[in-house]
Each structure stands twice: as C-alpha cells, then as structure tokens.
Length: 227
Image: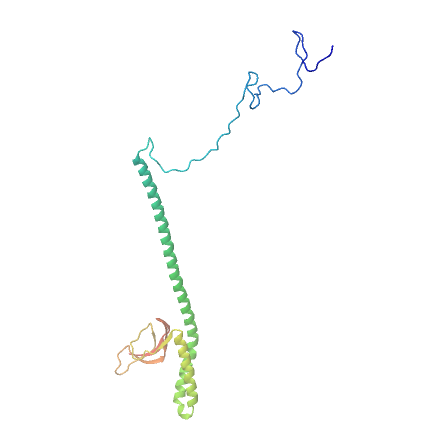
C-alpha cells in the first residue's frame, strides 16, 4: 500500500487524536485582530487610551442654579473693593517713601552746609590774628609815612586789601560797631567809662574788629562801652 501524504491520517473510532505540533494559543487568548470570533476564540476589544485630563480655565463667577445674579454681583463688588484697598495701601507706601527721601535730602543738605560753614569758620579763626597784625602795621605805617616810607605803606595796603577780599569771598565779613548799642551776642566789653554826650551802653571805642560768617559770630568785637 502506497502512503499518500496529501491525506491526513485516519484514526479508528475511539482512538485518541495525535497531538498537534506547533505553538498553541494560550487559554483565554482572543482571536487575532480581524479574525472572526468563535466560541473557542472570542474577540477581546482593545483598551481605549484614557484622554488627558485638562484643567478647566478660571471662569468668572456665574449665576448658577443655586446662585442668584445678586450673589454674583456682590462677589464681583467684593473683589473690586479688595483690589482698590490693596492699591490704596501701595499708594500710601509710595507716598511715605517719597516723604522719607525728601526729608533725608533736606537733612543731608543742611548737614553739608553746616560742615562747610564750620570748616570756613575754623580757617578764619586761624587767619584773623594775622589780619589784626596787618591792621596794626598799616596804621603804624600811615603814621610814619612822612619819613619816606610811602612805598612800604602802599605794599601793606595791597596785602591787607587782598586778605580782606579773600575773607569776603569765603562769606566772612568784619564789622566795627562804634556808636551802636552794646550787644553781648556780638560784642565783648573790655572797659566801661563815662563819656560826655554818650548814652550809657553805647560803644565809644572799638579795640578789635569783629567778624561774621553769615549770621554767626566768628569773633565778637572788643569794645569800650560808655557807663
């Protein structure tokens, strides 16, 4: 008998079927995609990817089923009031900052001017004795000008004028209060004597001139007062 490979082997009734070689589908596996469903191979639907969660955008408060339009309006008014209050706080802070800066600027300007004035006054006090000596030298040279010292007198006058002009440019002015009433804030009395025709308290002689820096007295004038 010739075996025909084209025909599957026949089995006698009651004999077990021969095992089938090759990979077997796993239990519970469904039919391939696109294959018809059978009782042995049911179609299993592919899982649907979950949509990405999207955060809802902030929406203005709307009147809902449980909220009346009056409630929504009241909520909006509260928000506007809170915003206006915050703006007022920022404005008040800015105004206080501006006022503090303005006060600081004025205080710094006053302190700078005061420091400059103290420096000028200190320098002037060091120079005034030399100016006094020039005054005495000029007076003595003028009294002795008849002895042929006119050139010397002219030189002393020029130096004296230059020094006084330099002090004036620095804001220092000298004063000679003869004939004025005695003022203890501006004058220093070195003597008091009766003088005919002079009222008591009147300055009748100036022994040493005084100097001012603005309204401040650098050195009081030394004077003789009528008694």
